[in-house]
Image 1 (cartoon, rainbow, N blue to C red):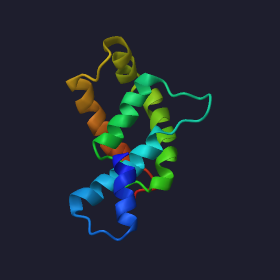
Image 2: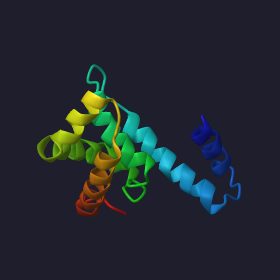
Image 3: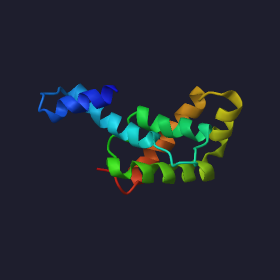
Length: 118
């Protein structure tokens, strides 16, 4: 609702400060990130890692039209290379500091190699 309201203000040419513009940019990407196909829900443990990418700003330079492609590629990468983090989230119900540090490095590297960085 906040992003939608602020987007409406932006459409009418309101002067937006840098923080508000940044919030809008992130909101667009988070909205794309949270979309799921009908009858194809994403595993909650994988969602933790994907949402981490969005809320920590790692997707801010990804073209919004490519967020879904990024999500698919990142989940495949996680399943192949970081199953231990997914399993740990499943067991503990949280993203531990150690796993968050590992995820931060992996996400940074993955985003830098993703083809659709702006």
